[in-house]
Amino acid sequence: MGARDSEVVHGYPHLETVRAAITALYRRLSPDGVLSYAPSVLPADVAFGDDEDLHLGAQSVARSLVRHLRLPDARMIVSFREMDHAASVELTAGPEYFIELNDRFRVHRRDIGAALAHEITHVLLHRLDLSFPGTRDNEILTDTVTAYLGAGWLLLDAFREDRLTSQKLGYLTPEEFGYVLAGRALAFGEDPSPWFTSPQAYTAYTRGRALALRDARRPPLTTAGWAARHRYARDLRRAAERGAAVVSGEAGYTVEPGPDGPRVSFACPTCHQRIRAPARGRVRARCGLCRTILECGD
Image (spheres, rainbow, N blue to C red):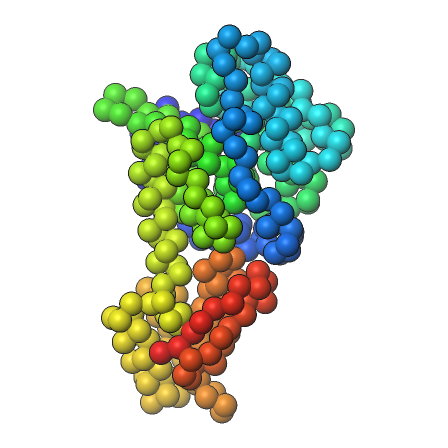
């Protein structure tokens, strides 16, 4: 896992991969499997004081994360050494996994849980045989799954930035972490914001949450605002008049004419799987992947 001590990138440069990671997670675990990771790991389970033994404390945090991520028979052996990255894990058949943390965590204990969460999620994905091609996309997958399964708020909380220095763990931007955490919060009915100790992490979460809420308020969903619903109705008329598909890049839907009436395809705001539904009047669409029920209509 990378640790960034230089200028932090903001925004949503990895958003397409993040959404694909959430879809892949639902496909691999099933909706019930994903929901089995509620609630999130709690702050008290991943903290230890400066007066506690470093190695025993790190082992205790690792055990808590192993339990949270539902890893059976997985013993994590944690050590510290000088290294360029924040942490690394040796992926084998088990039952023991060796995690190395950067020496700087000896004095920055508050972030040990974040580093371990990412590495232990690597173990989970290894056991699930879930991966993306390429190191970059696979690390984005790991960050996304860590956040969506309830341990990634630690990674966002490790983000700190002021006029002189900055620190960020993981490959997602702070706002992307906020987006994934907010998507989980909407799906699980859980608010992680009280757990943030970093003001910058809280700000990033609120920005990511705004984007997640926009996902849930786009046409053809009935929760869309008046202007968006007006554009959607106009696109329905255009598709019917032209006899050809109309694509809304901004809203992410496609309207297609058909012999039985127009149909619309759009991304599920929960798992981001594409859904196709009739585009006439009020209809209730059910996502075939995550089983979310969506109210649609112009």
